[in-house]
Length: 89
Image 1 (cartoon, rainbow, N blue to C red):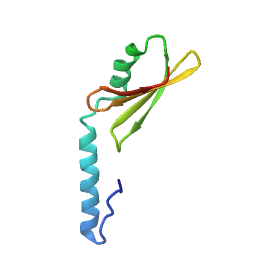
Image 2 (cartoon, rainbow, N blue to C red):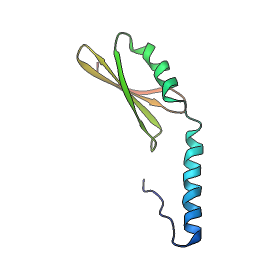
Image 3 (cartoon, one colour):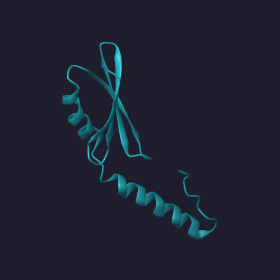
């Protein structure tokens, strides 16, 4: 999805600011990274938590775990904390 381009002139900057403000407001409904990690870690048993990535375009946290030399990726909805996908062992 392409980012909006502000039109030239004084109104262009205002439109850009409105877009940024709307983006921030949408993300205020998200759970924090800490909350997401605290919800998912117990589901992962003896796997070691390594960190996360956040994609604001999709509003998904991707958590990375390691178990027995295998990497496990867990995609989590930032708003609900619901696990969407899991790959790896």
